[in-house]
Length: 601
Image: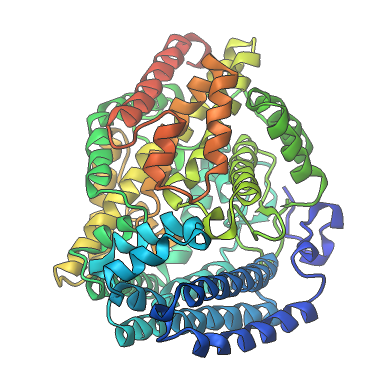
C-alpha cells in the first residue's frame, strides 16, 4: 500500500481508460455542445403540432433521439473526465454545463408526453398503425400506462426546469465527499504512517491487526462527525426533493413513484424486506461463528470485514484478477469471452486510485462508443470481485447497445445488478471448486458469506432505512441528524442482533452512503443478487440452453419491462422464491463453513 496517493499524472497510461473513444479532445466536445444547442431550436417544428400527421410524430421522435444521444455523449464524457480528478476545474465546469443542458433539454422536450396524452385515443391509435412507428410500440405503451401521472404542459416544463435543483443535494454530497474530505493518517500493521482514504478504508478493515481496524474506523467516522449537521441537511434535502417530485406527479409516496419507473409493484419491495427478516436468525448464526473464531466477547463493526480464516493473506494483483475473471466466466461461452477480451485490451478500464479520483467503482459509457469501467483496485479479493462485477455491467451494456436501437439500449436499474452479480456468483463457485485446500475453501466460503451479507442483508437494511425516512417526510415529520442516527442504529440492532455492539459511530454510517442520493436504488442489489444466483445455477446445470437465454436477456436492453425480461431468462421476481433460494444458498454455505470449524477455529 503506498504511503501517499499518486497524482493522476503519475498513473501509467496503460492503467487508464481511453475516453478519446468518446471525444478525441475537449474542442470536439465543445462543437457538439454548440450543435446540440442549435438542434434544440427545432422544437418549433414539433411543439403543438404532433396531431397534424404521422410524419410530424415520426420526425419529432427522431429529433428527440438525436438530442438524447448527443446529451449522453456530452454528459458522460464530462463527468467521467471529472471523475478522474474531481479537483480539476475545467471538467467541473463541463459537467455543470452538461447538467444544465440536460435540464434545458428536458424542458425543451417536455411538451411531447402531455401533447401525446392530449391526443384523441383514436387519432394516436391510427398513427400507430403506420409501419414507421412500429419500433415505438413498447415506448408508447410505457408512456400511456403512466397517463395519470403526466401533468399539463406548463407543469411538465416547470418540473423539468426544477430537476436541476432537485439534484443539488447529491451534487453537493459528491463534491464534499470526494473532493474536499480528508481523513488523515494512521499507523498500519508495520508501524508506517499511511493516509486513510475511501478507497483503502475497506483494506484496513480486512487487516488481522484489530488496532489498525479500530484506528481506521475511528478516523473515518470522527472525520464525518465533524460535519454531521451538514451531512444531515444534504440527505434531508435529497429526501424532500424525492417526495416533492413524487407528490407533484400524483404518486401516493416517493417509493411508489420510484418503483413505477421500472413498472415494479411495491409488493416486490416489501416482500424483499419481509423475506430477509425471516432469515435474520441465519445472519445472527453467522455472526456467532465469526465472534467465536475471532475469539471476541463482542463484535465491533470494524470486526465484520476481516477474514475469519486469518492465515489466508490473499493479495491479488490486477493482472491476476483479470486472468481469474477470464477463467471464471468461461461457462458464459466463446462470444462472451471475446467481448471480455475487448474490455481488457482496448482500454475500457481505469484501474488504480489517484488523488481526487471518484471513489468506488462503476461501469458507464455511451451508445456510440463502448462501455467503460472505473476501479480503485487494491490487490484484494474484494477488488477481484469488483472487477468481475463491473465487467458484468459493461458487457450487459455492450450486448444491449449492439442489439437494440438507441431508444431501447438502456436497461432499467431493476435488472442492472443481475449481470454484475451473476459474474460474482460464477467467480466464487470457480474459486471454491478450484481450491483443494480446506483452509482456502473456508476462506472463500467466508468471503462469499460476507458478500452475501453485504449485498442481500446490508442493502436490504439500506432499503428499509430509505423507505422509513421517505415515509417520515411524506408524513410531514422532521428529520434531524439525531433522528436519522437513531433510526439507523435501530436497524443495525435488528439486522446484526446481540452479537454486534451498536456504537455512536456506526449510527452515523448513513452520512457516507452515496446511493441514498439515488433513492430506492439499493434494493435492486438484493433482488438482482437473487435473480443472478438462480440464473448462474441454471447456466452451470443446463449449459448452452441457459447461456442462450441469458445472452438474450443481456441483449434485451429496455425493449420490455424488467420483470418480463427476467421471466424470459428463467426467474420470476414477482414471486418470493428467487430471494428465498438465494438465502437458502447462504444457509448452505454457512453450514459448509461451520463443518470446517476445525480449520478456522
